[in-house]
Length: 296
Image (cartoon, rainbow, N blue to C red; front, side, top):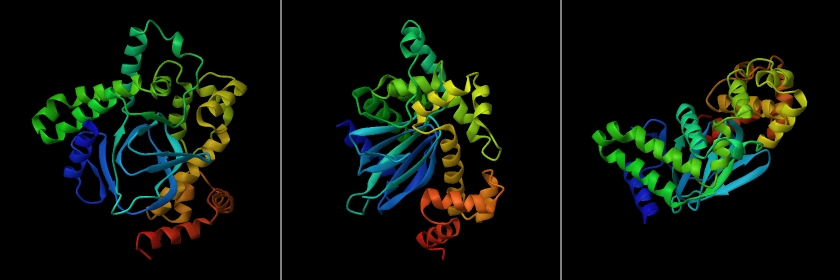
C-alpha cells in the first residue's frame, strides 16, 4: 500500500514527462515516457527508487536492471551508462532520485558504528560500486514520510532534515547498507580517492598520486580500487574523463572544449580513446546527440 501511495504522490506532483527538483533539497522526481538507450553519465552518490517501469545502469560492462522491487544505491561518484530502454507512454518510468549528502551520511555511519560496538565488523570489506537492494518496510515508510512533506510546506521546513536523516538511516541499515557504510565510514579511502579524482579531472593524476593521497602502497591501492569499482584506477580515470566529455558534448560544448575540460591536450588521443570507448568519433557522437534532441 505504501508504494502505491508514493507512486500516486509522484504522479500528482509530476503529471507530465520530465525531471524536477522538489522543495526538498537533493530530492528529484522523474517521469520518462520514451525509450532511451543507455548513454554515458556520471552518477553522484545517490539512491534511485523506481515506482513504475524499469531503469538500467551499466558499469564496466555489468548491467543493473531494476524496477519497483529494488532500489539502486550508488555510494560514490561513478562513470556509468544509463538509460530507460523500455519506457513508453503506456508504461512510463516513474521514480525519485535521492542525493546522499556526505556530511549527514558520515555522521549517521559513525553513530551506527558506535552503537554497534565499534567498527571491526565493517573493516576488511571494500565498498561496493553499484548495489541493488530490495525495498524493506523501513525504506518504504521513510520514503513515504519524506515525500508527504511536499504537500505541507510548514512541515517540510520544520521536519525535512529529520525525515531525510530517517531515510538515510533506512538505506544504511538495509540490504545495501554495508556498501553505504563502507563508503561513508571509517576506511573509506577509495570513496575519498574518487572524490579527489572527480575534482581534478583536468589534471594528470597518476596511480602513485592516488595511493599517496590515502596513504597506501601502490599495490594495495590498485587491488582495493579494483575490488571497489571493478575497474583499475587507470580505466576508471579514463572512463570518468570520457563520460564527462560525452555529457559536455551532449550539452552543446564543442569537441575540443569538452576534451580540454577533462584533461585531454591531444585532440587525436581524445578522438582515438573516445571511439574505442563508444564505437563512434566525438564528431559523430555530437551529430547524433543533436539529432536526438531535435537541434540538427
